Structure formats: C-alpha cells, structure tokens
Length: 329
Image (tube, rainbow, N blue to C red):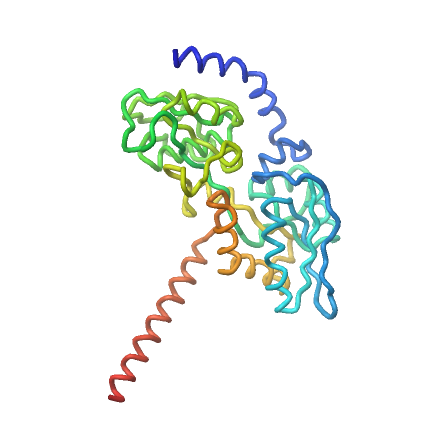
C-alpha cells in the first residue's frame, strides 16, 4: 500500500519536478532565482526605502528580500546609527535587480543570496560582485515521518528527499552526517542517489518535488526538508527536527546568505560596520528568538577563533584578578 501511494505521488508531481528543474541556473527566472539565491521566503511586494532621520549620519543603502533579510536589517538600524550610519533598506521581490543596483553603484550592498547564486550571476551577467561577509543560513533538517527518532531507524526504512539537484545533495549530505548513508568521495554538493556508496540500513530514498516531501510524512519513515517547507508544514526546526545542518557543514558554508558588494568596496568602513553589526550578539539573539531555528546565524572559522580568543582573554583577566586579590590578602 505504501509503495502504491508513493508511486501515485511520484507520478502526480513528475511534471512539476520537470518544470522546477528547467532553468534553475537562470538568475532571471523568479522561481528558480528564489531557490538559487537561497532565500527561503520571497518578498511579497517591492517597497520604498525606509529611512531614518539622517542628520549627519553616513547612509548605507542596502537592497534586500523581505524575509528574513529586511527584517534582520531593520534590527541593525539603531545599532548602526550609534556608529554614525543611516541604514536605508529597500525591499525587492525579485533576485535580479538587487544585484544590478549594486553593480551600478546605486546601492552599497545587497542581502538576499548565497555564494553559488552570486557566482552564477557574475558569470552570466558579467557583474563584479563579491561576498563581504556571511550572515545566516537556513538549515535542512531531518523530520519525523512514521518514526520519531533516528535511533529507531531500521532495515528498509523509507526517507523522502527533494529531487532538485541542489536540495537533494544537501539532503543526502545531512543523511551522511548522521550515519545513515555514505557517499562517494568528492560527491559533495552535486551528490545524487547514484553516489550512495554505503547503505547499511538499506534505506529507500524517495525523491519528490520539494513541495511534496512534507505531504508523505505519514507514509515514509523520515522526511528531509529545507527551512521554508518545514515552516509551511508546521514544523519547528528547533523543536521538531531530529537533526539539522550545523554551521561547520559543507552545505552551510556554501549556502550561507551573504552581504554582497561591488568588488573593491568590501573593505570600506561602512561595509565593515554593516557586516560587524549583522554578526553581533544582538542580531544573533534576534535571529535565534524570531525564527525558531529556521534561520541560524552563521559562524565561520574566523568568528569562532575570535570568540575563543575573547573567552581565553576573559578567563586570563579573571585569573589575574583572583591572583591580585589573593596577594592583597
């Protein structure tokens, strides 16, 4: 019965899957660009600039998607104002104009895309945009189907995954990270089911269009979803995911959403200030509280090293103070 149901679903979505795959590398395609840009929720409509009373503040003009990017930027405004900057955010509902307005110099930066999309856009359009800093990623998660724990995985279990190239690879890498399968060396972010080298549980990977995966939760052992479809299906990443991508995973490092600027501007004072604020504890706390795990602050190796250094310095200072107090006694 289970296999007949899944076969029906597969047949029903075959055309949809084909359409989704077509043109996925074309930045001008609205639907494809949403996937390629790594933006989990598209802006609903373009909005005008939101500006504060600027006074003598130096403007920073940023083009962004509505959610979560513009929402995060709004939280950064007062923090940047304290440093002498007027952050001006314009929301776009497509994934072409934000790059064009940065390339032209009309805007200082944009915040909506991941690095593979940025590189693809540069190659296709001849633009000169670079990554000025990674801010957040939107993690894939393994969610319960008919089983509620990965400890219960058994021989022959079924796992539903998205069938488009990028998302399927991320799903397979997550399964590998959790010891369910092993992929061929070098498969990486182009992995398909054909790259499964070891399958100790003999799991059956059920490939479906991304929007169909959550619908078979009652028919498969586990499902693997990206952030927006998990939220749409009523899942909480932090509460319901049995496992999800971590900051040090290959996928998170690749698909981190970045601040993009025109080449040569990445080290300007205002761009450095923007990135520093977006990576501050205040913004991290906002992201963690608002998005419930569907959006996660990105910690690169430099960030981790800096935090370790700060922690070590704090411990050393505490030890010195304790020693001084002991000497004084």
